[in-house]
Length: 426
Length: 78
Image (cartoon, rainbow over all chains, first blue to last red; front, top):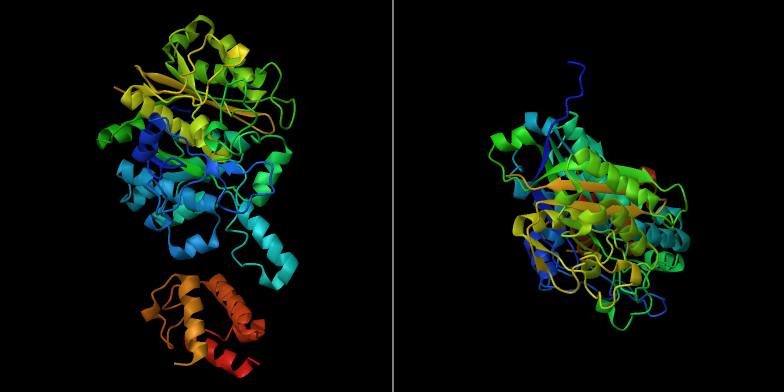
């Protein structure tokens, strides 16, 4: 120990996705760019009597772009844990495979960790086991109940499966989880706690109590039950709430010199991370968007980039009446004239809101936008609401353009905000 | 093979995710079928549900093989 905090550079070398538009990176990305929507009627349970009857579900294995849990998760584990853990293990496995790091030595694995969180965790299992408790009594509650629902059990399961003995961490900051997970993990590498981190988030809360709860909080769209693909419409004047999504996004973060030395494919460098609290209200965003502004401002300041260097902003943009315009207002205040020439879209228009998974999945979309020089669209943006005029929100159709640096925002219940800045590496 | 044995094996295959051929009567849940102690708690619960028997903890501790389970159930089911 030399007593210094030597900040090391952190790059992304592996990606993994489980989404309503595809259960691996290239499929999900192709469908996103094609302008497809992952929304549909809820199939997980009979939602007839619910105000919201739609969601963006991860499709079953026999679907064209469905998810086959057996690819990377044992039958026994699948039985014991909630869907968010299954999604997370799979996405983490994809990312490790993509990075070529499934075969690390014991020495390397002491320096490799996990920071994969979730916003809500095992709601379906909490719901179903509560019913078992009520109907059959305590002696029928599953012995796997607790560790099959806990949020840190993605990181736990992944560390066991791949032998990762470095930091084992799990963020729980509602819809900011995925972004915080990547930011926190990047700092662990920057500060020499680890050389490799699997970082991201997952969610799987499309269950009766999840849909009922968010609907009662007036957060979900309820006006488009007959046209689900139209329901998630960020920045559009007819938006009326978010559409619940599910899935996971996990990246491999790696210390730059190590990645370079082993000839890894380097997708991007994580150069800025900002965090803030609204200190205002449990569900409503600050009326001046001050938390969002400070989060973005901190991330930009740390990045060392000029505002005009940001080519693409992946917005939090959930399609709620209040949130979208406040975020855009904060972006407008921060970026000012630099808004010109920048594109900003909300991919929640296509895959819904993955809650704790959102920030990680969206970070991966940002990375792919830089790789391919194309930004994903904001679907259903038929009539931008008043305050959204004058910003390139990439309506309806993906747009080819140079993307060298991105900003990704995530804001969560409780007034928790996170922003990430990444740039392409030559 | 008895009806009890068939049903026990089916539960073991489903709960532990093992191949049916591996679930012989002599197979040990822990040594041969990859179960841990909590898996056995869950198996015992499933046997109780399936056969309508009660398997108290001290009896459950002695059930270590597939055959132990079949024997206990055959002796105690109504």
